[in-house]
Image (cartoon, rainbow, N blue to C red; front, top):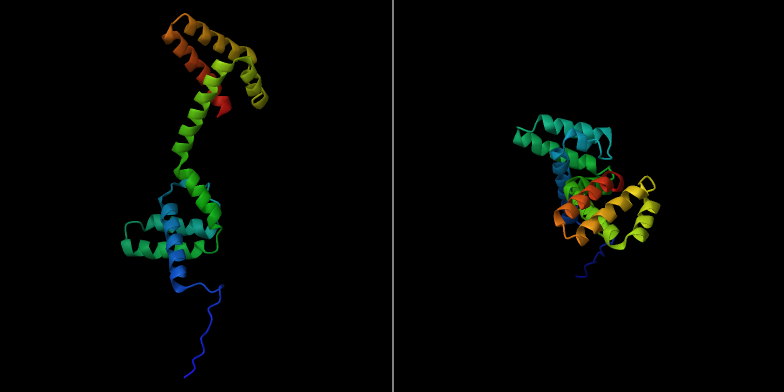
Length: 171
């Protein structure tokens, strides 16, 4: 009763793994269906995928038909660059968070400009040559002057003005 034991190749993928991969692609399909037209335009995908998503938008009220369409979208996604699509989806979902972090970095930059003065202004002008040196120096001087005069309201207004000057260029 010698039975031959077949060794499983490392290259073989289990049936469970195939199902997990298909479920992951269906989740990406759900996320793609939830996007609006402007967001979909940013996704790097084929015309077939965009057409499949458009069909899913049309049948969104019929549960079973939508389920089958999502399965089809998952099938189409097998031939797409899912890494690029996932990266774009993450960027679109976290846009608000990215904007918040950018604003915090800009506030920190403004505070550094106030504290360090000319050396930091020179560094900033190297990165963003379209900024005006004189205008930034005037804002920084005004903020420091108001702080020394213990007028926090005027210093806060000048700091806000500096922030608003830097925002369109540095973001």
